[in-house]
Image (cartoon, rainbow, N blue to C red; front, side, top):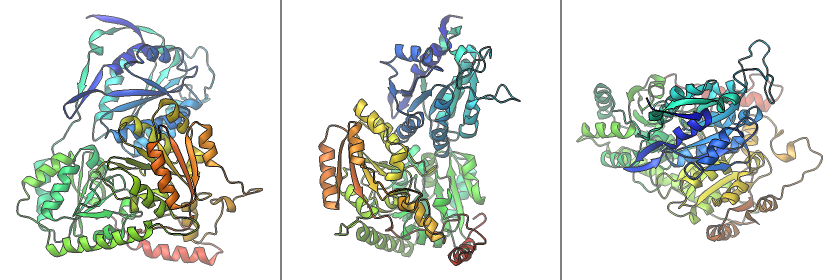
Length: 614
């Protein structure tokens, strides 16, 4: 057997460089690059290996370990899980910073390879700099925290261990059923140790995403249910995007006159004008989709994990005899809530359903009702997004202005706060796959970092980041990253002086405003941040506008600009678009406040609508 002598770090990097993937017949690198911040736990060995291959596997320096891992998530999402970025940190706080991003990737079923330096395998220098010691378990380190938030975890304490670990990590990230972040803890001494690796370990490996065909019996059972449906509803989730099943679903729905509601992750499966589009479903959904869900007798849920914001904490499906069919590559998701499980690829499942569904169409009265409700919902959108002469524009008006200026292929992106609801409800999708609302983990800070990664993945489209002042203050340094690297973003910053949507929830449940809006916090004086100057200090173009008309002009200038532009606009903290479903959230069962007791009573009424199973 021929071997090649390399350090463990050199071998790891060489292996990554030789992984390829076929996307629609095109041969591409599986690993498109590395986001890295070097410290003593990886700068002497891993950086040496990465420097040597920087023209093959480019390394991009982040400003924060969490944000660079979030950028990797934004990249993976935009590439529909077909290419992967690596995020590499040193040990201790650098590694710990990535835990939040790992959780976001885990919740969203997105592939990211996380590499973190670790303590010495020999333990001779213990305790090393940034080592957290556990008195009763010397093997426990900061990197063990990743076990809770990754699909695959390993600690590399011997150089030969990567021979088994790296193929397993790659297989996990490419498995539609098990996809998620993988993590390798790299002991510092092991990174530099020499080993004679088999040459064939580094031969180019060509990967293709598995498309599992559903069991024929499951398809037959699903067809039997669907054929009986008088009020069928399709629920399109993020898995439709990742399976590339959007076109097939759109044709299937149109042919059989079945309305389609979208989850938050599934937004953008259909164009806004598609005749079977019923709008987004759930807590931050549309009145049209929520009304149809309440009446549906058969729900065909495709590629969704059925999160509480989608199901209204299991209150949106109200028909006594409603049946749920769940098509999902992951068995775990397919069997939830007593669903009839169809385990397999969304595109393959739809093809199999179509083959046995000839002659069926939903009753015309049902499809007419769906169209009527959606028309009413579009009237709500138009009313709320229309520009007005109010002193402070609403989120919806800002969303409407950005939507009007967005190109057909431009990608819009948000994550936490009030914008997910306002964007999910009011954005009119012009081209499938151009909408990204990270709401699997609703991770504050994803917005700008994820935008940086998304721009790398879609260089020919404008990436429009919509962010609130709260998330901006939490994590904004990748404005600087985007300027340094030339990955231009358009950042629209809505400043409502605090965490307004949480203040809304607080008030809705009877609690007075407290510690959310800046004016209700323990402060000496209310000082507003000059966000435009802050962005300019990081090299971006920036302007502060005060009206919707000015915003639209600024957007036109931003699109013509040669670098990242931040547009700041003050927004109303108390005006929201209607359409919501009920949401289960903890409410005090006892309180001295009448408003809280009333909220608890109202909440109890809502809980009576919850279904245990479907």
